[in-house]
Image (cartoon, rainbow, N blue to C red; front, top):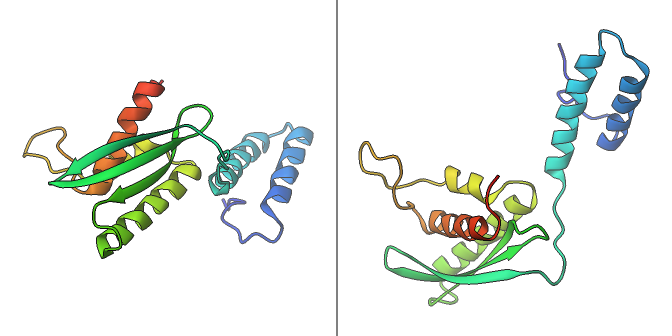
Length: 161
């Protein structure tokens, strides 16, 4: 069975969503469950495309992270409910290639966080250096260390439910 999300959009997504809502409201027959599933898939797709716009003035927290002997000064920005939604980074080697790469990576992390991914999901996605048989280990990269620090700070400010 073809999904409405699988077809190339001929109309804007918001219009397709409105049409699905209208069909769900009018038809309580056999197709209602399918339409509701399609509506939920489409809604999830649209919401994932939407960026959380942060207020100009927002709370933040700055901390030092040390990974494999390198020091990084990281600032985490939070949304209204206390979730990490942006990451800024400074380090001692300003202007170096590694500085540019880490700054760009933090921009990418911020965009992921503002488009719906949570910091705990990032922690799970980044690799760890584990001993054989161990359940967890230290982060494999500075980005993993940054994500883990952000998750720890968010958990302290806003316990995971």
